[in-house]
Length: 452
Image (cartoon, rainbow, N blue to C red; front, side, top):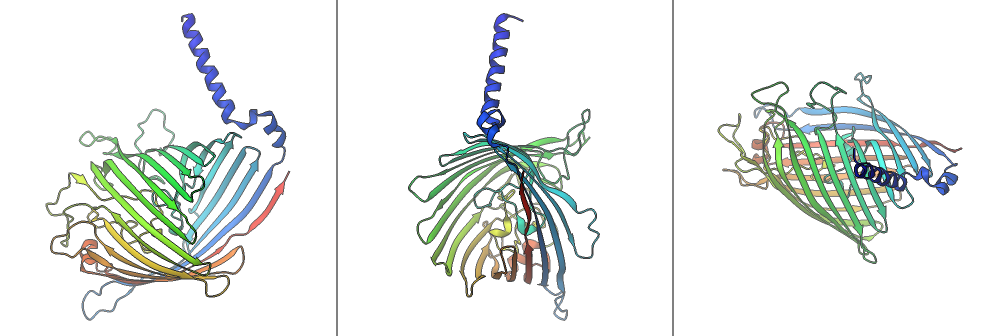
């Protein structure tokens, strides 16, 4: 090896060590002096959730509509957090099960990560993390789904002076095989690998925040060991922006995202070209702390030539899929809390997209209580043969009462009236209309905090 090669290697090593010094706070003498104080926090979070649904279409005119869903669910979380100068760690153990079922297999690590932060704003975080960005439309915890979302990732970035820049990397595997292939399926997350960049800037002296998001998600296609349909990784990209403007007594939000690349069919393990987009606007007005109003509209693109007849795909083929996917978003937060459209897929695997126009009001009739009522007009985004675009109408009523800082009760009722379009697209006699009531009781005390 030549002298110049040795010099280049030494220079690379020096640069790497310099970058490590900048990132890792433990090499800072002052940080070491301050880091003698350690703080340990332990708390619990218990959620009791019950649902009662009644709805659907009878099999014939003489049949009564039957109850579709009645159950109680419990979710318990043990939260342990550790903090010292420049260092954080968190572990959340979760157990979730429907009352009356065997919950022995429901114990899992919901979060488990360590994070190091430097005084100059650089940070590095690794482990299982509950990711949440902007309004959670694309990346959120989806906490209403009870199990919630978390990701095994490496996250590095910078935060300071109004700027936030995060880079997220994930690589998923079913087992730690060294000599076997790396085909991935049936994991906690549907993707094989993911790369995300998120940037946010708060404008000085203006109540405006701007976010930019880029994601590249790799999903396994093909079949393991198949020569006819060999395994591969197909990539879809998402990029867009989220804006939030907060003048006095109001909040204005807008977002727009585009998807391209290729989408994988979970059923057939094949892939096709992807070309989708979505846009949304929302205005929240709060003239007083005791009441407010909301108005908004969402548009999510849909596939052309969606089959609407009962009983199968027929001769419909799609070379390009145009149905937008919210990916890791908190979906029940946006498209009606029943979320007929993205939590539960259409029977043929295609989506006609969605238009969601909504209006609502909220108020506090008494101290510690908040109430809201929201109306959704729901329609598809694409033309349908011999069917109207209107999917239906939804009315949501919700009330919450905070007994204390650690105990809160929420009760809600939703009424959905679906049209023939809803019935034909879902191709299920139980999906046209429904009534749904639910409650959630949340107890989240801190058990103790200690310093040593």
